[in-house]
Amino acid sequence: MITAPWGTGKSYYIQNKLIPFLEGETNKKCIVISLYPIKEISEICKSLLIEIKFNKLKKIKPRWFPTGQLIAKSLFHGVSTYHGIDFGLSEKDYANLFNSLDLSNTILFFEDVERSKLPPSELLGFVNNLTELDGVKVILVANEYEINNGGTDDENYARIKEKTIYDTLSFDITNAEVIGSILKTYSSSCLAPLLESNPGLGRDILAIMNEPTIHSYNLRSLRYALQKSEELFKKFNEPMDSEYLKCTFLSIVAFVLRKKADDNTHWLTDSKSPADLGTAMYPLPRYCYDYIVYSDYNSESALASHAAYLQQRDYEQTVSEVNTHLKTIYNYWIVSEKTLVESIIYMLDFLKSSEEFPHSECLRLANYLIGIKHCGICSKEIDLCKAELTRRLKCFEQISQPYCYSGLELSDPGALEEWRSFNKSLKEATATINDPFNVFDYTVRGIRLLRHNVEEQHPMNSHRFVRSMDVRRFVELLKICSSKDIEELRDIFIHVYSAGNIMSYFIEDQENLQALREELEKLQKWDGFDKIQKLQISFFIQNISEYLESLGCNSETSYSDSN
Image (cartoon, rainbow, N blue to C red; front, side, top):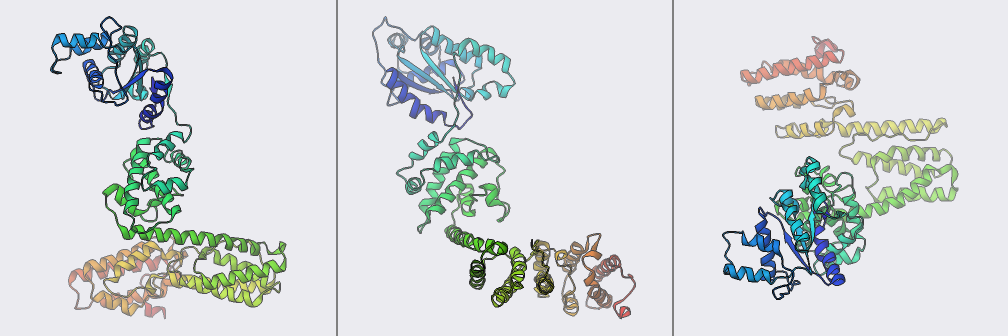
């Protein structure tokens, strides 16, 4: 018996490796019969008869011998008891046929043993008769774990197996040889350039199979991934970068392996799904997902993915050089002044010409540059770098946590004061950018964008929400809002101020909250509202009073009283 899990390449190995080897070394003929979905022994016999009589396998050329030689008695018995099949032969013809058939120089492969509907005892009894009575060589090919009901019938199965099966070999993929053989079948397809330029592709595939979150060696899935990749690559209207094609192919392999093991492989978000459905190294492009799952190909999406890949690769190459100079700056006390000056000038040129420098690194770089400046080195260039860092930070649409531990303690009083001033300016820039009301257009349509901005970038990070709100414009907006619109605005406020310790975050919102409550109290009496809208306004007033109380203000204190 040869055993291995489903899809690991047993059949491929037998057809392309083992059978040619056996026929070459032993001069025996090999016949392969699938037992799926056979229910009776007679069906096995029928399949054997058809394989031999009609020569379906081109490599098999059965030899017929005169009566008197070794005959397949078990085979004859099985077919003679099979009812309802007419081969156009009389009973006498059947007897003559099987009496003249010699299988002594034949090896029978019975595949898909676990998929057969026959009880193991009946199947193995038949095999025992073939081997002991007829002298036939038989190799069973199976997923043995499935034969004995996933290990629940070990004792009964082991007892039957011991009497019948001489030896059991586990088919195990320990290297990329089988994978390489499968890849070779596509050597004349549109995947040929990919295969030729990546001789280690088999090892890359095996590495993906070995990933802890995948851990699948299903070669049927690999063949399916190759098929889908070939279809996709044929659809590309423009030449694609060879490294991009490799990454795309390997991401498809990873996704198909995941999908085979777990159908719950759905695209959830554009930021999370590519790596979750592919791998961190080979993220799955969206257009590949859509094509594999829905057979929907979007050429624009494919071209955009290719362009993004090239841009990211160029950036990573630039980052490598940038990191070299950053390392010099971050270790300035152990490098030569000449090397340090060169790195500062490089960073100034880079900051002027590129927008790719991460905002999370701005504060750290400024910290070190200020330290270097107060050593009397490159004062002018460092001031220009600081200006570029400030400009860059103000250009970001959303900043959550731009500040990181700098790693350098400044002892010079002048350097320390300059550092504090720069740090303060960055915080002010960040707070302004993160304030949702800075981009709110005070329209009903803009309410959804306001909610989106608040949910994406919680104002708690900037310690302000309504501080920059234009109370007058907000009240004018409420006058054209439906009850549902007012409810949605209230929900946004509830989302922001629902934390129990809002005094630690939104103390700067007190003044505008008091002003808003006073205006809402006036608006509640406005004749342009129906009773439901006025009810929503009363809810709003109650909410704001609760927020003010949490911020340490007397809920009855009005804005005018506070002045």
